[in-house]
Image 1 (cartoon, rainbow, N blue to C red):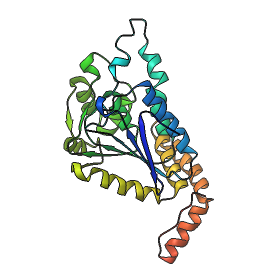
Image 2 (tube, helix red, strand yellow; image 1 turned 135 degrees about the vertical axis):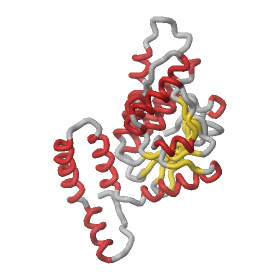
Image 3 (spheres, one colour; image 1 turned 180 degrees about the vertical axis):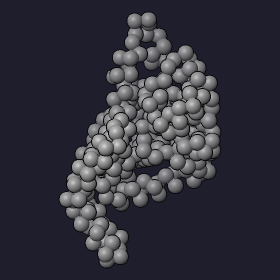
Image 4 (cartoon, helix red, strand yellow; image 1 turned 135 degrees about the horizontal axis):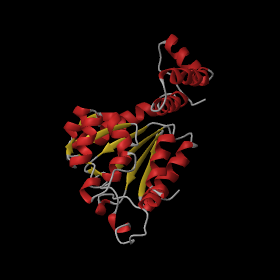
Length: 261
């Protein structure tokens, strides 16, 4: 598929996706969200895609909503409808995609772009990156899943502080409070992110997909419900050829060759 706002490259199971509006700091438009959704749907059924690495072109990761797309729509324009037609299904598609998504935050990350980053599974960030919720700065409430993920990642009090004050958070601070997994020297960001993406691409696709399903399920249920659900997922994994290969490789003291079957 040809994309207008994304660059894609598939190598050894890793689908590298680059937001490609560098002159706008990769600000989001309806077209960007539509193409991200399409990419997630295609990747879900493409056996050659085993992990996804998402980053931004140029100096920024994503500045959030391109305000030129929504600022002159008039009072009757519904931001809720806009979200339901763009960012909400985009973030949901990322979470439903049962393949690991690594986000390499290469620069400023704000607003709905912050929500995009939080929609991934693992976040690495350049030491040049800064995180900004941005919504309150223009008189808005959070969207794109930001107020869902933020308190779960850094706790309610820190989330409130970031959202209420529009505090700029450095990559080092983001790593310290658990907002990202690692802060990395800028020139090493993509190399380290690709190493992780390649490692996950070599893992068991069924097991990784079920693990992501388990993590998603755990966010809104009781312990008893969830451990029963874990058992259901384990039944699926335990009947896979990958499980048999993993056990055989362990016994033979070699690296497993997982095929996603």
